Image (tube, rainbow over all chains, first blue to last red; front, side, top):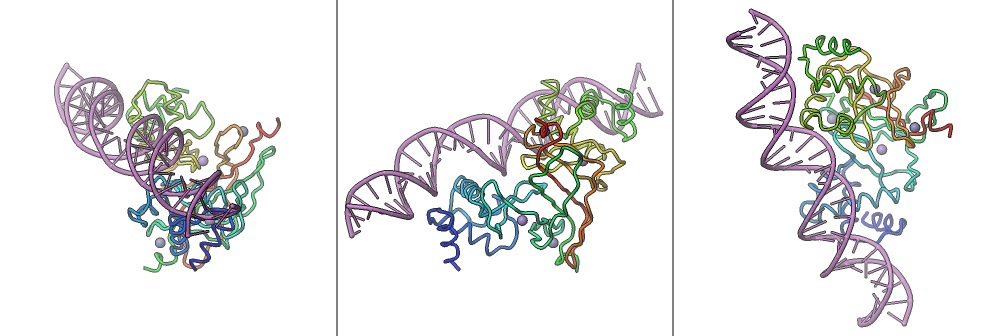
Length: 139
Length: 139
DNA sequence: TTATGTTTTGCAACGCTGTTGCAGGATAAA
DNA sequence: TTTATCCTGCAACAGCGTTGCAAAACATAA
Ligand SMILES: [Mn+2]
Ligand SMILES: [Mn+2]
Ligand SMILES: [Zn+2]
Ligand SMILES: [Zn+2]
């Protein structure tokens, strides 16, 4: 378990530090997309905010996490596939529940390809669906 | 022209003020989605930043503009259809050019409907496609 | 194990973004 | 023209995100 975290860091040529371990474990244990603020809150006073920012940036560059667009600020989630900095090959849907506020990856839902007007070339797509999640709709 | 602006304000029961006129005209003349910073820059020192924030908020509530999700902060664009605060019925694609940086509405491209997992209910969708726009791809 | 070069961290400081309260000014309607 | 209501500018503030720098931690090889 903790070994997975260590391996992930090693595989990406990153030094094994407590902050990186804790942040990775937080992503693993919570199943949702996390913002910088979520992490800061979740980790208490354990690390400086700046360190958290830099860890997120490093993880993004290494392709360990990917950005999740959100109306109220950027969130991040683990990459399930093998990604690199400028090659985050995700095309799955992100869902944000307007009731519980949680945002998560719907890995199994691919964004359908779209016929763009002439001359346009797509490089990256980001689809956010907002609504009620399964837990919140059965109230 | 200016008359359209006055009518729009009147139709939404908004008082006719210089700041609102100028912001509406800016949205009409530029064809792209604008951020608060774009407007602040475009209007010079003419109005206080706070007034621009409040004008955007008012226009959103009245359904005059809608949000455009963007990796580097929120942008806004005119609603072509009749919208109200909590009923922005847009389902068109937004495109951001990674070369010229412009973001705009592709009004004619509808977001395809997606089959969500059981229990999930969609209320709103936001699809941002990043890539090269027509102008930038013919370089 | 210890020594070494390199990477990472915490701290301080800074600029930018977005919000609120309040008093004075502008607007629309009578 | 008067009046009630709405809008604006100003000041202040909290939060987000970045940078430079010195001290601490890490990985590697002696
Ligand atoms: Mn995802
Ligand atoms: Mn649009
Ligand atoms: Zn929910
Ligand atoms: Zn372009």
